Length: 261
Image 1 (cartoon, rainbow, N blue to C red):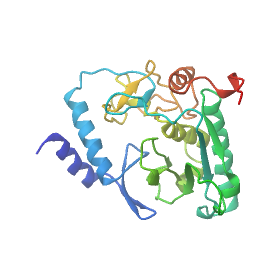
Image 2: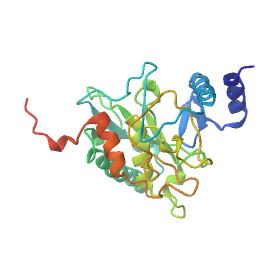
Image 3: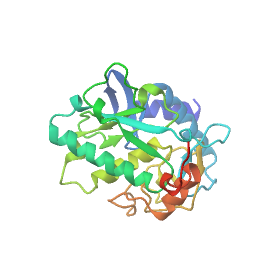
Image 4: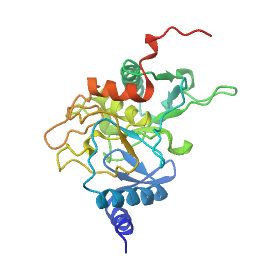
């Protein structure tokens, strides 16, 4: 049995398996949902990473295609979303996520050339003739399997969800809820976890890097870094190094330009 198959069988046995909206996923690295096929690809990449362990990578990390092209949304594309009101248990929790999403999206807009658009009029349901949002934000109780999870630009359309677990609303935990959504929106923009870099502590979660491109030097305070190995931050704020990496992919913030039709 080759190493990729060994990993696949191991993860199928040991990783949490969740069913969300009728779709089965495996949960890896705390906030990564993978279908069975995606898990197989993940294991192939992990096996490749182990085989080339001497390779050193640094910095804010972008998703990449097999031929080395950076994965990102098309220039000028509005990243529209809805917060599905019917999935939340009450109005206060829904309103809290709406506000947290607004703040997290605004923070990314403030450092690079992206635009998030909340189609709030569709939060209660899409009406005939309304444009379909790029993704939605939903409440889903996983019994604390994760705080929140998102997706990457190259994930299938049917996986374009940001799921919020009830643990997001707890007040006795160490994390900043807005920081959690800043982190998840980083995935939506195509950025990988920072703690997969060679400079990160050994006990931080490891992931395959064959589909990654380094953008900056290693940043232990990056918004994309877990709080692990005694480093990282509980606030998950965007750093100056994050800004540099994000602009390498998406350019400066749109408010730095004067646009003409």
